[in-house]
Image: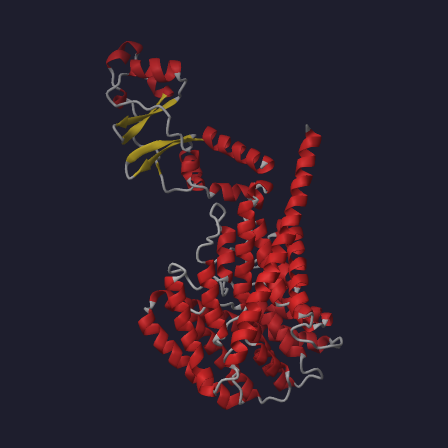
Length: 553
């Protein structure tokens, strides 16, 4: 029997690994197709248009995105990567596949027109949707604890593909759901998905890294001190940027499009013209790779760097406030590179790329609360693993000033234990709705004959119709002389001061109420109407059922 169980576990593990690879392959193909269509097919053509058209088109793209979300996506929000984090923590819910086509089309309109957002948003969303669909199709392979496994694999595969960085995809997908933790149990399948997605993507688009900078950077203790200072600056900047972006998301949700979109479009035109005046290039548009190249290139005046830092932040904020559908990973990377370029312009290090790349690690790690993924990203995309030590110092230092701030509102602090997750279940999961009750006019003799002698109940709810009146305990029956039982109604001995629970409570809230009252049972009401009874026995029974489900599914 045990050998058969071990064989079944091994078979499910192999099946999960194979499905993770399939998820990666499908995601790599999907991301490569989206990138070809939008980046090469749309945005590169936008760059060939007259300046006035380049200035106006991002606002037009936001209008198209709004219309698509409203009419084709059923009024869905413009979030992409946030949907992965939200679905990750929604333990019992399923990823909503209905708005996927509409969101991707809206993202194509946003990014293809030149809005200052990142392609990793739709890439993560594509992978999440593919993984969730495969998970639903092959749900029998996975235990309850692994109900989100392929969705995590898809998110990892999306990042691995769009940045040609499989390790970054792996670490990001495991790190981003939490501000201070990792989803460690999904490591190996996510690794399979990241690797397979990367292979498929680079087979189509080539293996050249995003920032091909050869050689190993020399650094000394002064550089490490500079990395720490840059980390503190990045922490301050990322915290402010996160607050501004959260504010912009609130405006996108609360302000009517008729008011919001004209203001955003006008703001984007103004930012475009100002950026072109400062840099002689349209660096306020697009996801930001051209701005990254500008930041890494030495020789720019500190004033121009500071102005571009503010203008790019404004462009991204306006795109988010306008309801744009795209990612915030690359915008954080751009802000970090510009911050590092500003530091580099002040101190003139031997290697002009040193501080811009450290700024990327620090600003990205702080803004998205993914310090490990940020360090790996710099090493993978620059081709310079020697940056790992100073980048790690910069990323770690930047975390000190973030508190609970993040660019996404759906992150949780740390992983909760299995017990904590069960205590978050609704109290109705453990309610006995068939528990016998007694009317208030029933006699103690009737109560004893039926509920105590036959049903062996030690506590009986007193219910009049659907109204809960109190609880009769076996101990209280003994306080009444036996000869008075046939004439004494149970309402005379019902306890009315005991605790009651609400149908909207969680199981944890009910347990705390039972502990405070030192009782092993709790009547549950719905707007004063009796629903059922929760007992410690039912809670333990539910726990045992979940244990069996999670180990045998």
